[in-house]
Length: 176
Image (tube, rainbow, N blue to C red; front, side, top):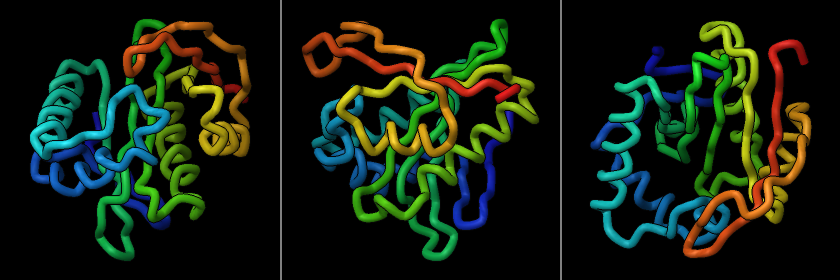
């Protein structure tokens, strides 16, 4: 599995434990974590633990997460990747989040496009899906802009922050 991808403005690379300080700044922001299935981090050790967990899943070929680095500044501005890799059924689930400071600049679309191209062309994946909380309008707009199809709402499908939550399912097929 590849450990880095490039776009016009971004470098996506597998996370390193040394990224903990920069990712902690993002994952500790309640605006960023509002629609994520984690509480905003309060200690840098939580970021280290998350990076190590994600890298363990990558070693097991179950998931892979990339730090999103802005090429112009060399700063980590978020993360994205495949939350789930299912090679048996030729599908992946994507996830992403960006620092609030860079919202609205098209970085999410650019990063997701890179994930789509790698999944469809290199991994020969048939289906890419994203699960989004119904109130996460910015993420929904991004997925619609990228021509993902809304498939429906999974009612109370997960427990997040102590409550059962609904998730909207969006997908994009290799043939779309």
